[in-house]
Image (cartoon, rainbow, N blue to C red; front, side, top):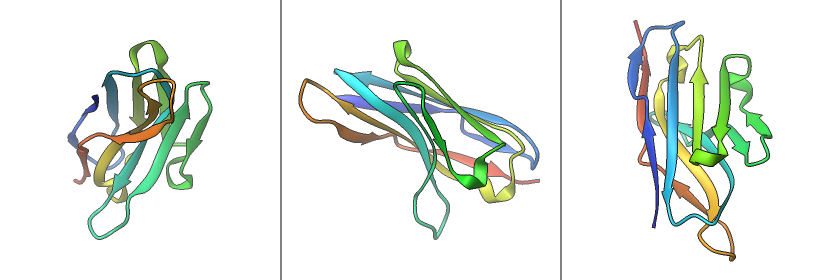
Length: 120
């Protein structure tokens, strides 16, 4: 069984910073990539940032220049450094991992989500 555990929930003032982390644990054969999605009230879940096991990254246009995603393959961990936070960044942030538990196909797994609120 695979679990994704997120940490870094917080209330931050506009312009502030916050770091999220997510650890994947359980029976993991290989990880293709990990990333972060977010969902604000009344909106659909959207990709924030993703990193592949090879280090390639993909960030949403709305966070480029402000957010950075990094990973630690040895620890099955992904980090999201969020700077210059804006009220519109307020959302529940979900960790996602695409991985395989054996030599078979890969599947997507989700964390439970962590609330990020940007408000003065």
